[in-house]
Length: 213
Image (cartoon, rainbow, N blue to C red; front, side, top):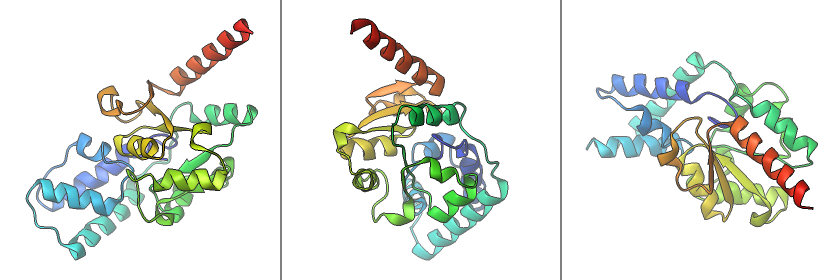
C-alpha cells in the first residue's frame, strides 16, 4: 500500500524521525524507506541494535505506539500518481488485483477512501499474518486467497523487503521507483520509474504482440 497505492511514506518517515529524535538520535530517510513493509516492532529493534542501544520490549511498544499516533495526526491521504488509472486498466483487462500490505486492516481502512478496498479481489494485511515481509507468507496467503499459482501472478513493489517477500514466494516482481532509487530495487525482475513508464511498456508489448500475430 505505502509507496505503491498511497503516497504516505514521507509521513511515515517524518513520524519516525520525530519519535527517534525524542530518544536522542537521528535516522535517515534511507534507513526508514528500505525497511518499508516490515513490522514496525522489527524496525525499532534493528535501528536500536545498529546504534548499540539495548532493546527493551516495553520501550519498543511505547515507541511504536507514539509513532503510529503521530503518523495518523500528520498524514495527508494522497495516491501515487497513475495508480487509479492502472487499477482501471487491470479491471478492463479482467486481471484480479490483490492488496498485500504490512499495515493493519483497521489502519488501511482509515487511510484508503471508503470502499476503495473493494477494487481488490482480495486483501492481506499485516495483522492477518504471522510473519511480515520480507517473509513470503503475505504473498503466499494472497495466492491462496486468489486460488492461483505463483507463475500466474506478478507483484508490484517499491521497497527491498517487499521484493524479497515476493521472490521468496516464487513470484515475478515489478519495482517502481516511487520511494527508492534503482540500486535499492535490484532484486526485482523489472524496474520502472513510474506507473506511466510501466503502462507505456505494457502498451508497447501489447502492440508488438498484435503485430506478430
